Image (cartoon, rainbow, N blue to C red; front, side, top):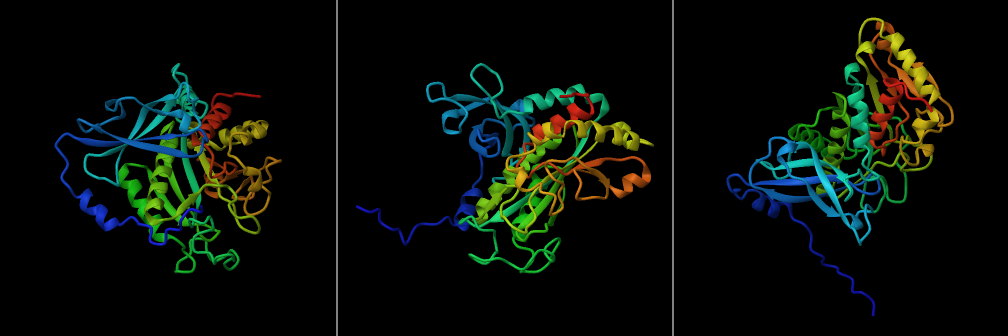
Length: 365
């Protein structure tokens, strides 16, 4: 017997939701949503519990656990994986004293799970603390309909060629602005250090920037910003793709350009330290590429404002290079550089960790 087709399937009504969100919450009670990276290393999971007082820091939130056999992180015979709270944010969805907490994941033996790259990242940041490494992360992403086709694109067809969409204005150019601005406000409310946003070169592709933030904070905040983005997209009935090349052909891919500097780079004549860093990055190009995101070879082709994945290059104001030195930095002889190789689906813990290990700690292959 065939399954029946439900033509009058129920839908979610946000007006009904508001009625319940407006209910008074008991004094001292706080809804805390735990967020973590699952076994894919790219996707996020979340679940919520009630705390008897409003937490003021992640230290006020107790460890928890989840069924790792359902997230690709454990076997069913030994399924519990621990959640360690590490960064606390205001909850823009339930408001009030409610919170969202970003977590690390640990196995039963208290060792980090395979996809917990934060544990190694924090080691690098502590070792390089005296150099004051600062990161600014530029997260690109693509809005998709539920059918997997880019949001606002003709079904089964393509929009006009790239050109007018970058920082575009208008109903046919800025596809999904309501979601983008909702995300911007939600990040500010949550406490994410978001610095800006813009429409990107491919239609339905957008970018926002997190940072500058020192040490581990940039990666923590980028992961939380991704959670907020996906939750807001859920409310708009759309999807977010972090794939570095969601549509094949003559369309730009999506990256996570990583801006980096140390204290000496930001001081007078810091350009010398920048050039030294670039030489160190060149020597470990292929090692970095391995942790810069899955399917990145589809994006790093030497076209569409990228360098080839097979070759390392650097240049002033060159968006076709692996490493770009901004024009102003070259003129003022101090500042930062931009690593344009990381893909949009990269783990920022892995990216920031290897940059610090290569540039600050002098690790070699």
